[in-house]
Length: 46
Image (tube, rainbow, N blue to C red; front, top):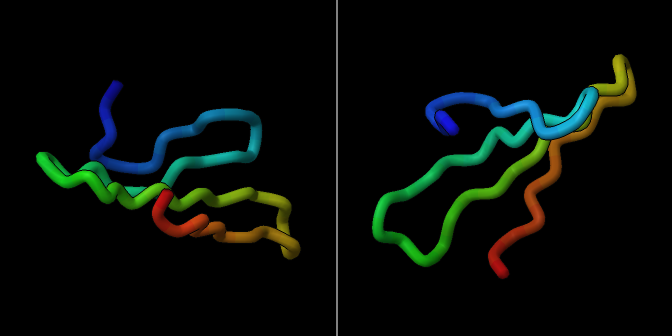
């Protein structure tokens, strides 16, 4: 799976993080598209 851009993981839910080679701490941010009530989530590390 290509991770060089947003990856749709469900209807209206996108992974917008970044894969960092050889880094134990990855960036896993998610965008939930709900029109004017959309949200960007960054759950932090571990």
